Length: 252
Picture (spheres, rainbow, N blue to C red):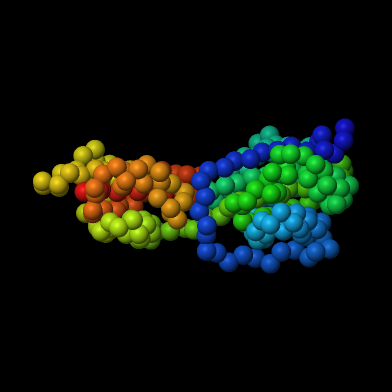
């Protein structure tokens, strides 16, 4: 079986959020991990894409999985008794809005990278524009080098007040008088709102991207002559590593 035929693919994706974060130093360029990391960024630079930053947490998750593959001499995205990719990344402390993984067995880093680039799914992971971090692990096993690339788009870990302020700024940029009020928390689960003689609308939504308004909110603003908005950030359900923000916006 050719190396290309032996490479598997797994990809998970949701909406994006650009973080402000500090990244770790990548491995030595002479190591297999360093060679694969530099090869990925050369491919991205050649396509005019932002280069990826090295992420130690993703590398830790990748190393655990590569070690398991080498131990069992088996290439898979999830071995028996092992957590899936999302759970592995979450356990390593990664907060993300997009996550992807490439795995392979090969004789050296150059051969593995070439095979990935000739596989449409793996190439798509390497060149996906919104990804911003990468962790790689290569472990020697009886079958050769077991390689794992874990990609992600990491997300800022914002508290409720910070979430509200970002949404307030977006709404203010649309010309609304927007505020965040502790009293607005009642709107996280309320079905109706009463604002005296004012016509009021409550819109609740979840998003991974607090750099732009969701389409449903944009449409509400355009369809009605709302002048005022009150924002509440609500506590989301457990998202298992995915950064998701739950908000309620009262328009009147």
